[in-house]
Length: 193
Image (tube, rainbow, N blue to C red):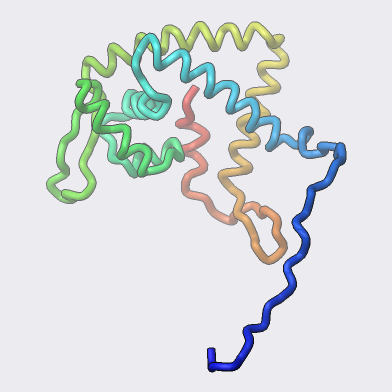
């Protein structure tokens, strides 16, 4: 700034004390809010179910589920089937390998993308966790009538399909159904149960 020139300073507004109000909390009824809340509650109980008795993180469990479904798989395959973030998958795999639950095998055609497969020990652990998971599933199912379960399952499948096929349009700030999606059948047919 040249000498003798004063910088233009905007007057600073007084600090906002914040509002004292009670809103209508309309978003509490939004499906996205309610499903997110349910997801967090389920994740909390899943963490308790996995950590103490089995020493597994949720991410490690989800990887074992994917590898039990299809082994060997590359990180990209696991991501495509589950939508788990690739860096999170990469971070969880070394502990699974160290503990003997997963084996790594290099791909001679692509050294950057090795294969991973569940081991016999990993399969034993998977089956032990599934026994506990099955009991939890049964307790959740007991909360609903058979008709409610069927309606819920159909609604969840429909919502998953709609998200797989949608894209955000920044021009109008809305979501639109995508013309083509290569992941639709893999996510819906290959989802974790």
